[in-house]
Length: 77
Image (tube, rainbow, N blue to C red; front, side, top):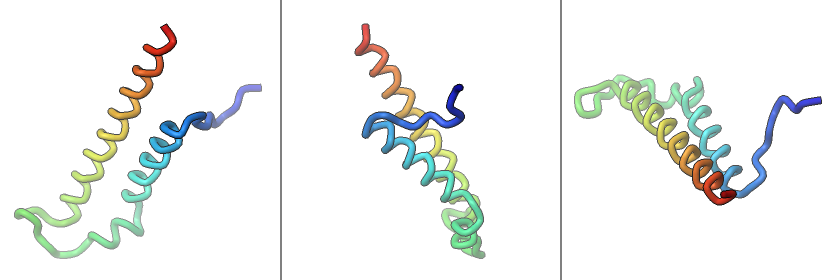
C-alpha cells in the first residue's frame, strides 16, 4: 500500500518543509488579521505588501527546494 504522505528523510528536507509550512501559515487568517490595517507602506496597503512578501517567500522556498533536489540527483550519478 502506498503512503499518502511522504516525509522528508534529511535535515535539509525537514528545514524546507518547515519553511514552506511557515509560509502557508503566514497566509491564513490569524496572521492576515495582524496586517489587515489601514496603513500604507510605500503607497500600498499593508495587506497588499504582505501578500507580495508571501508570494516571493513561497517562490524562494520552492526555488531552494528544487535546487536541493537537482543537487542530490546529481550526486547519484
